[in-house]
Image (cartoon, rainbow, N blue to C red; front, top):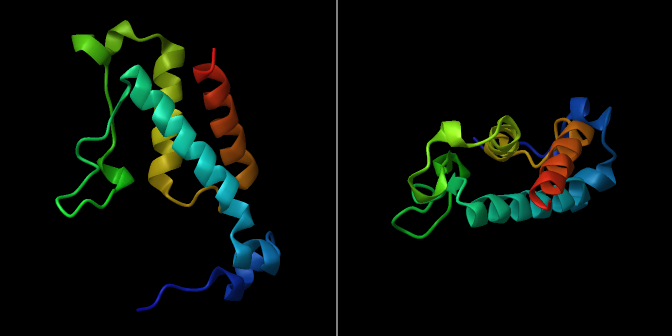
Length: 118
């Protein structure tokens, strides 16, 4: 069964213009910010991506898991640290890049990046 074109789904048109859907502008910025968010979590040792890369080299976000650096326990992380990890996993594993609730997803990603940039 082919994937439905969002531009042809009437329910999508109530919230999104055909131009937003067809050129992907709705999700491009969010996807880039999610990639930045991912990199910052990896750099801190808070995201394990070893199971996200398959034998053929393709990447699947569903293989990403929370991690702790240097043998630390998850209980060593602050509540805010854990929240920023969980929020990333929630947004990334949805894989819609914010198309279903763009304002909410943009806010989660922006707040996560703000926290990680401290």
